[in-house]
Structures are given as structure tokens and as C-alpha cells.
Length: 287
Image 1 (cartoon, rainbow, N blue to C red):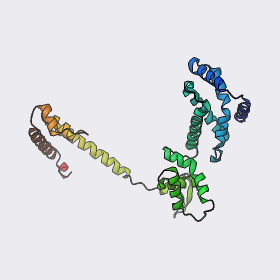
Image 2: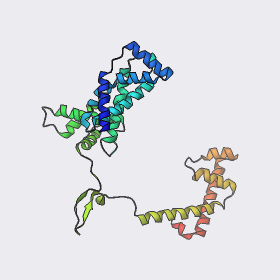
Image 3: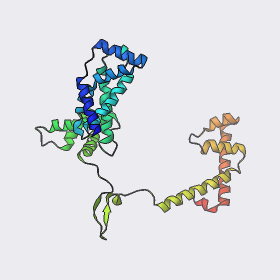
Image 4: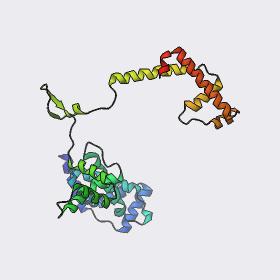
């Protein structure tokens, strides 16, 4: 209740705050930028709270509290004040409008659904314009198919029709908990949605077996590499054990030998590794 009362007082104060003339606004902006004058900042922001309230009202149909939208718009207003350059001779309201709208829209995208959405500019355009365009295009044209409707919306916003279809499905359905019960099972017990999710990952025992096998192979490889001489080890490391493998020519230049000689040393080192590995651990021959 205290929070609601404080917000109402803020709205009333905003509605009674005097408008700023261009010259006064410029002087206040200079005082804030050059002298960190907090009083000047307060006058600028209070004079433009009407703009915040007006812009927040445009987004009230998204189901979030108006007070929260106003508060987020105020955050955008303060961000605009921190970045505003009065020397550019642009009115503060023109500059601040973008920051206020962006702050409110970001808040809506974060809180409208438990699933994060609208991460790209195209998705944001879809989120905030799809329902309005859908209503306009279906007015007087009730027989239009979803496919045709999505194509028209995609053309209007410059996005792919498949993105329109995905966003339309998201906006038309509410969030559903994976722990929500969906009925009983054959044995009479209840089941949740999460119980029916299929995973393509290996089973836990298979994952453990894979980790153990990889660790064992790493030990075998390290032991086998110890049998190589320094030049063979360098060539194998740079040719086989690095993400960006070196060319025969570049290795030959750094070692002072021909690239054909590098190829021969590499081939001999690989044969040596193979012999050592199969002799010490015969089961690796099948890998």
C-alpha cells in the first residue's frame, strides 16, 4: 500500500510539474553534465515524467502493473539524462523517448513470460506489433488463413514468416509448468508433464563409461608420446594435437628441413605410436 501511495504521489507531482522552455532545459542540462548538479537533474526528470507516464500507458495491455511500467520508464529517463548532450541542440524529450520506450519494452520482455523472448530486433518487433497487425489484417477478412496472415505480417515487419508463426504461437498460449499434473498413469499414480519429456542424451551409466574410456585413452596416449624424440614430438603436436594444425611447409621452414622430410618424420612417429599403443594395450587395436 505504501508503494502504491508513493507512486500516486509521483504521478500527481509529475502532472503538476512545470514545462521547461528550451533555454531553461539547456541550462539545466549543462549544470547536470558539467557540475553534477542533482537539483538540475531533478527538475529535468520531473518535467518529463508526463512523457514516461504517457509512454507506459501505451503498454498497459501487456498485463503488467502500470506502476512497474512507470518505474521502468523512469529508469530509462535517468539513463537518457546521463547520456544527453545539450550541445547538439536537440530537445531532451526527443532524445529521452527512445530510452524510456527501450527500458519499458525490456522490462515487459523479461517479465511477460518465464521463457526469455525477444532477444533480437526482429523478435522485439514481432512481440510488440504482431497482435496489432493481426487485428488490423483480420478485420473484415475473417476467412484469411493463418499461413496467409503470417506472410502479410512478415512482409509488413520485414521478418520471416516462420518467425511470425513461432511468436504467434507463444503469444496465444500461456506458460505451463513442467510439474503440472496431466492425469493418471496405468498403475493409478499421477504423472507430471516432465515425466513425458524425451531425452536423446546417453544414459547415466553410458556417460560414465564414456568418460572412463576417454581418460584411459588419454593415459595411453601420454605414455606413448614419451617414446618420441623431441623433433618427432614437436611435429606430432603441431600436426595432430592442435586445433589449427601446422602445414608441412611451415614446419619444415621452422625446423630447417624440407616438407618431404617433415612428412617422413611424421609418418615414422605415427607408426611408432601405433606400435607402442598396440603392444602395451592390445585392445586399442580395435579402436
